[in-house]
Image (cartoon, rainbow, N blue to C red):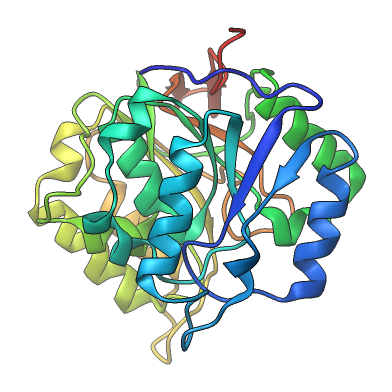
Length: 298
């Protein structure tokens, strides 16, 4: 995987809204924070609305394409998630992603774009977006800045094993619902030998079960070397079955090293994950080690 150039103080960051609408106050708070260190730019059309989207598909796709092709930009950071990225996949010139590689930063609905970056052979960063950076603790903002500037994340320890063993591979994945929506399409991720990361929020146990079962039927878990499970909101049904039970039942018997408890996803302290970078998952010791950052020193 190609590592895009690291972001340095004073570098241009393009903010885009490829998904849902967002609160202007949170957006401006995040931009003010980032402008203390970077040259943050965005199109004024970013504030447009079209139903539950931040403008029409054409507006959002055009904004993203301009950011991809901007020779001055070092990174593309989403304003927020929501829903909408999958509608843009057929509208983008994804070949341009590798021509002028830039770091993509976001999570949740941005999973669809992380997969597009991966298919183009470029690393990206799963992590907080502009609207959350405006109000999260300063320590989290500093960690985010270190990640986009070239720091390799500290290993995660004390994770919960579902299935023992160790696995190495490039880190891939993101939001379960978005990944399940890409199954069977031309935009599905390449997973051979990858360590697959999964997270989601607000999904009932039977829906998590259905999505995991679809991916099992599609053979996704046959391809991966290991599974790292991030934040899931445990919403038990009337029968008392919770999401943790579903994750254990569906993934615990894969025969692949599998860990739960990665502190990333829809949680207050959403840690940065370098997608496309090599990692080692050791379920026996409960650790996930990162070997390289998302970016290069170039």
